[in-house]
Length: 415
View 1 (cartoon, rainbow, N blue to C red):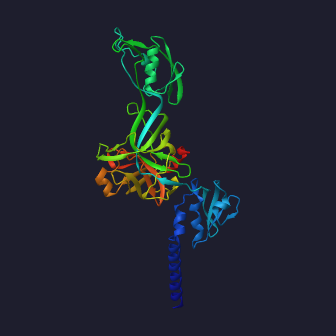
View 2: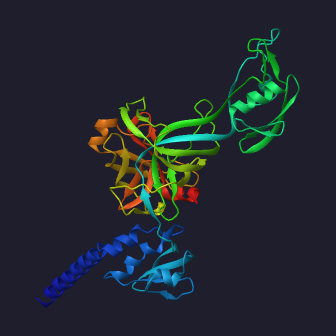
View 3: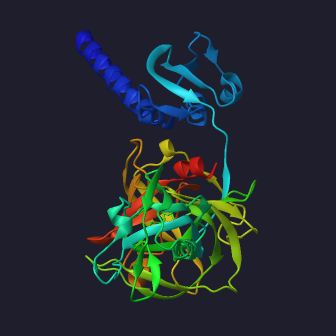
């Protein structure tokens, strides 16, 4: 009888221990510990502080074998990177690189904006025939080695500020050889071209088609209240004919009005039909057009009534798959918050504007636009109360889905 009671007692104690271990494993601090990857990932030390505030004795030790306690920001040092070891009941379980990062607060965008961009120099978008009478298909610039996508910045040492400068300087040179300086893929190149007389227009030509400005509709992503720096679009403004990135000389963003929507369908991207004029409210000056968006400085504050006090920016390692929302203007209702879901997060470097895949789940937006449409690029993405990114592209074969860029990557360009 005694042996039987002893066996029952051992089993009971064993079951209780198993139940206790399961209960401990389900505690918030243990769940948080499991979600931290062992190895090279860098975590904001704020993510580690809750580990020390639970029921399980979890401690953090620095690389100098000194236990870290209290405010980790003070213990580890501002913005420094530190290798720390996480211990449970004194047993090392994980090692991570921890850094102290400052909180950045931004006013989320969502407003529809008009973009007026004037390029550096004149962008070559194509080549035209010069009718010389005996050589109708003469294209002197192309034959000299110039290419579509080149940016003409000087002719005979004179700076090119507009497409009109190219025509003026060529007409003044008769048939003399002219020196043409261009920018190609970031490199400065020099060419010599002989203009040919066009008997149709009675003027000398290089046989160039050039463009010096671009206009369009997009969405403001954020502006930083501390210095009024703004970010928009989340992707570059490129030339419609050549696909070349337009190098910004100057320009501005203005408040635009959405008047209609072309609904997106499979295989056919939709579009916001917006309008702005010279009388539209100027919001800011454009300083940079990059692969990660459009950046500059606001002239004036622009309030977002949904988040009048702004939002903290979320770092890329805080972004996760799951529920989120976007802010966008698709009607006269102004900025509205719509539900979405983050389907995939990519943490590789150099993905430019495709850091995550999102899916629109809000029926209101799906009914209105079919999902993501042109003009919504730049719409802020919010998750867990933080501004974590912006919409950049729509998937043509599925307008309910598209890409987004990390707000951290946009802030790096904004400076």
